[in-house]
Length: 358
Image 1 (tube, rainbow, N blue to C red):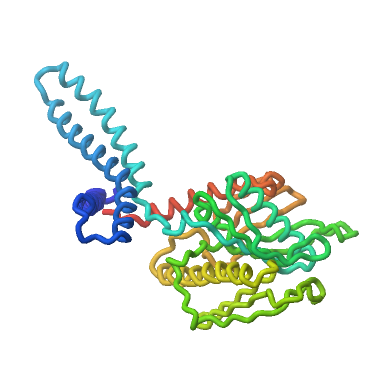
Image 2: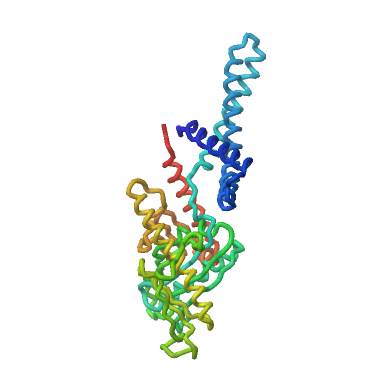
């Protein structure tokens, strides 16, 4: 049984403290006020549920006393009502458990999506293109904005690398488990003997960092400008519009050349750089935390093979939760929730197991 009472007392104390501060705003600056209002609105549904839980617990105590009443009618009424109250308490416990699950602070953020062709030559590039289309369609189904920041294509409609910015409601919470190695098994279009080949592409999903999340100082950056180049290395621009930014403390390098304007390329590069630095910090924190506990689905390592797409059998295997589905075509058309929903449920179950038990 989860130790509810201790957690309830802490939550109610914090809620009442915030409520007091909000009713007397003297000496509170605007930034702290915004933070307090945010905390207050996040705690309110939990507090309402706790108050409802406590009220029904008190009702159960009162009904238990009535069961021993001399009047048989009162006894019967108390027993029937007690049965309903116990069922209600059980449901409230489940609802409260979900509300008490630790939230990922980045879940509501937009995301930077990076897809790179891996082993498998041209076939890997074609598969990377398929994944790019799949995420684009999934974004459309969720009414998210999908913006391509940079793309490097091959001559056969494949993709060597593509970086996108996806913005909308709870983007990162849904896409965060897509990071890792995606493997494909199929007969390539160029294969005359009909032999099945195995190729791979790497996906990275980063929470989009805002300036408030990551403060980058000018002294920590080395910015190089050069002329944009197209396939084969030929120059596609007569001005030095392409930008390469190196973050000296981490060694992270981002290049952008898709825009004709140096200013726009620099802005895009900084957006990607900021998100990669935040992602780097989060990985370090997760590494420390995983020494004591394992709260995430899979290892979170980008080199981890997370999923296999088997075209001959129309099958997708999600290796982290041992899930197999046979609707490969629909998933490539963007119906990713058949995989994402079970992954989210697994994460929730792991986090529930981390709550304090008596």
